[in-house]
Length: 81
Image (cartoon, rainbow, N blue to C red; front, side, top):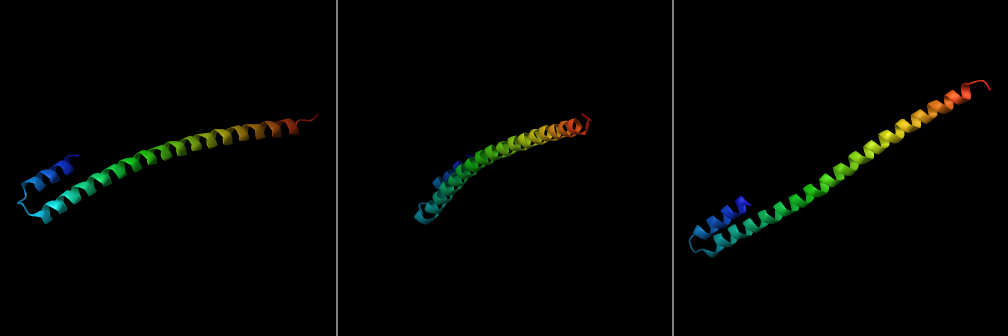
């Protein structure tokens, strides 16, 4: 990730002051961990969205089939025997 590399590059250019270098390194590591977590969440959300879309399609198809069956039953029962 470019931002992490940039932070590490900045850290390498800092004077030999342990505190600022440690803070930059910590922030770079935290940024990288956050990116990994976001990528994981994004992939799981994508799977959830795909599953939801499949359920909606299934619901719509089942609903249409039920309406068609109901219409056929109504038509069959309303005809004189």
